[in-house]
Image 1 (cartoon, rainbow, N blue to C red):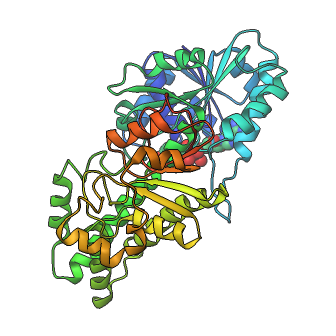
Image 2 (cartoon, protein in one colour):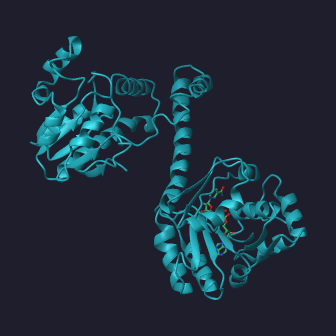
Length: 438
Ligand SMILES: NC(=O)c1ccc[n+]([C@@H]2O[C@H](COP(=O)([O-])OP(=O)(O)OC[C@H]3O[C@@H](n4cnc5c(N)ncnc54)[C@H](O)[C@@H]3O)[C@@H](O)[C@H]2O)c1
């Protein structure tokens, strides 16, 4: 394909060399005459393993050329990748001056071409930038309409400096948010030889994935280092500890616990986190990230409570009370916290949980309900359907198939379902719907 790359920095220079190596005809564009001069002479403007040799090879073969003439680059290519910088401003916001400038320039250049051109933004940008900022700039400067005369996509870049050619050839996945299937079809052939999945998605999702990945990586590093400091204070080798942590591929290094949902609770996580934080105090070892987990977890309960309170409705039905499906354990259940919050605000709350019916619970849990939660015990209803029918708002707190089935079949158009669990299939749901954080 004929490809233009805007911004010959770390991302652009590697992408340009690799795309040219893969047989494409690549034009690099930059505002820095020094970088262009280096590239013209076959030198890469960045230091990376293997990049000098690769750049020389593709420049000598005539497959990578450079220019500062945007109109020329756009007229001679079918697709552009924008890899300009998006540095932080003092207040942490993104400086999008370079992205805006390139969008204006490409827009002006598009006005003069009569072939369909696809613009792919690869710079890391806050969600909304591609459609709310680039699209209007491209349309107003070109006089053309997205989807008719040009396509637009966002493709997050996952390469790391220091190993970027290897990362380019072995990405975790290729994610492309496109304005249309046509745009995705234009991008796909460029990357489909890579040994990973090609995932087409919404543009905003693709923009957010990059931030989610980088935040997750930072979180992993900080987590390992906090466990490291704590282990060291305890006289333990943190590398042994963390090595064993990584060997658990079921709960630790896996998709487990990575689906947005309701707060955690139960008999272990809150208790053991508190113990860990107490240890850290005794050992004078600060672990601010671990210390932020319980407050953040409370915010998730607040978030759910706020949705209910903001409806202004009074008759609320809560489906579930125990801390997770299939158990009657209510110790530190976040649904108990939510129920108490709603009752405290004077709402008429009714609760159904098949595992927490006073007629059925026995032993310690019965005592727990009667002694610790007498105010909730009186709100329990055995008949789920009757509770749903009597409620204005139904809060789904557990995902047992039988409970979900009751909600889907009995909730009416005039009711609102607030979903804390991420109902998988709600095509048959008649009620209005509010997801907790999706
Ligand atoms: N560096 C990385 O490892 C990495 C990895 C993933 C994503 N990213 C993201 O990719 C983007 C680029 O990062 P980078 O490290 O390559 O940046 P960089 O600063 O190394 O390179 C940016 C290049 O864009 C050029 N430029 C600026 N305005 C221009 C314009 N109007 N026209 C053409 N060129 C212009 C600059 O001269 C510079 O050469 C950023 O948004 C960054 O967050 C970077």
